[in-house]
Amino acid sequence: MRYVCLTLICSVIFSGCGAKSFIQNASSMEPTIKAGETIRVQMDAYQSSSPQRWDVVAFKPPLHSMPAGSNTDDLGIWTFRIVGLPADTVSFDDVGLLLNSTYPLDRPLSIEKIQYKKTTASGLPDGPRSPGYPITVPADHYFVLGDNPDHANDSRLWGVLPRENILGKVSKK
Image 1 (cartoon, rainbow, N blue to C red):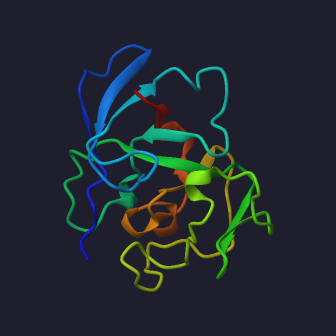
Image 2: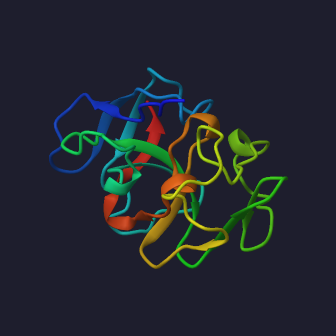
């Protein structure tokens, strides 16, 4: 199975702060954000605060997250949901996501019934780029997941997201 493109097309030039509009190209965040839907990214949302659990964020993907042979000159912008905060321990079992050895009861309705499994997005066993579990999120990093795990090249495959890669908080337009 080929990787689903998770790139957003920017409808405005990145400069300054404030909200920017984008078109979601991928299905990785469905049902929360559908492919082709316009979203807004609050570019200054995290200037004076840190990202919070369950926030949907826009970010520059880490280079090691890209499938082999990808063009590193145009990584695009991705959107995923923050699940693991710095110092959290993230793992999975047959029931689903575990945070700090417990099932999160406050997770958003959109991912309430989703079972994230310790496999790659294609359903194959963990690959060489996949993090080992449980994984403890280091300082200034986040564990991010797509709401549509069968079509998400997310932290399950490539590990934690550095804080410096996060561009802003996503909301629907």
